[in-house]
Image 1: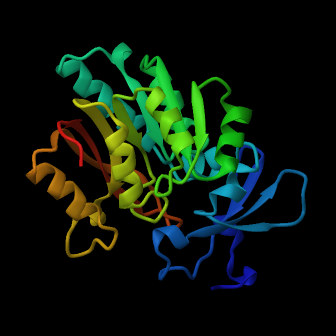
Image 2: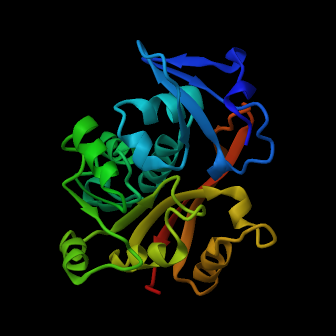
Length: 262
């Protein structure tokens, strides 16, 4: 990894109360290996943060939004949720009938977008307590319940808690394919959704290519389609966010009907 001296002030970007700077010599970094250094207004010391160490990012109020949404132009919560809204309007299906399970809920940005389109009932699920703490701090009231759980090792108490929410829609945004939400966790959440139900999610476009995918999602999604367990209603390629070099990172947003369990 390049040392601190490999940074340049030319790449320093001040967003709100934060100063952010990015490494130059990082062409070999995959998306989940990207990192930056951050300094808050009035402080002299820089702190190095790996982007996917979410527990550290969430601890600092406003840092997640400043880094990913203001600086790197992430738009996925809006794009996925509004694609779902578009499909429901065409179906037609009343958004007020949705009871959403938001998997990989993070600090509540997807939940906020769901509220913005009129979803009345939302339960968040994440594996790290810092995500829930950030949501309660920054977006209190967005979720009706928030469960901290490992969906690959779900205890019976949390399983019943999620079942009691009676979800008929699953959302997962910017969480598939890099180990945050593995295929087993996605399937576990999928099976908690009513049948018929709705799915709205996104994934890096490379992870839908059998030749490039090492996550298992390309095979899983194709199998669900082939077995008529889901019916895709919308499929849209778009720029999820910029890399630390300003290059577009393309994802695919999908909305589907759940027809059968797995």
